[in-house]
Length: 261
Image 1 (cartoon, one colour):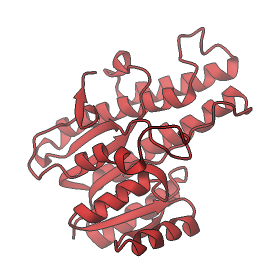
Image 2 (image 1 turned 90 degrees about the horizontal axis):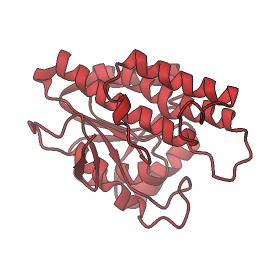
Image 3 (image 1 turned 180 degrees about the vertical axis):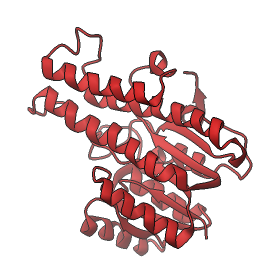
Image 4 (image 1 turned 45 degrees about the horizontal axis):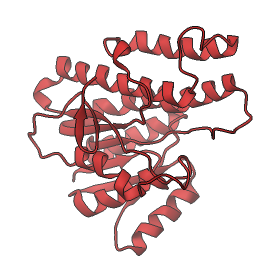
């Protein structure tokens, strides 16, 4: 039985992705959430719509939680067909939390925890599988895209350290922890696509980053023009690319369109 997993999917775009996959993906679809109660409530909501999602607890900031999901997928399904990395956080613009704390918390979840998910679950992805990273880019990542993973990790650690010293803008970093974290994820997707080409090319796994656009969610606020279901369109398109498709791979997309690096 094919299986798809969407991280951070008890609300917003993640929930919309689960909804669409339940309708279009021929296999089991797992809604995951850090909080079991909220996750099960979201599953019940989709069940009321006549859909049949399954639930598994997942806190991407907890390596043991990731490994529990990994072991479950390995035992029950022998691997994983589709992984959508949607989980992430953002502080509100007017949040009084000091910027260096915002930077540390945001990078911890959006970059380092996403990297942990990839490290644990990417080896489980079966031939012809798909991995999608959700990004919301305000800044072009091209200066970083030739990084190797250990260099990228050091750069992300340097950003957090520079915010603690109050020199991040002087050092050329943008004044947005969320933006930096998502640049990191986008570049990470590029690096991991390259690693797949080197180590598992024959498996034809497609790994891409995509931007859902400005979507009305708790994170983005009520003024955004897109509904969550509209925001889910590009990630779902990438998740459902036909078996044997030779691309896109290692690309950044929005509105189902590849954007140059």
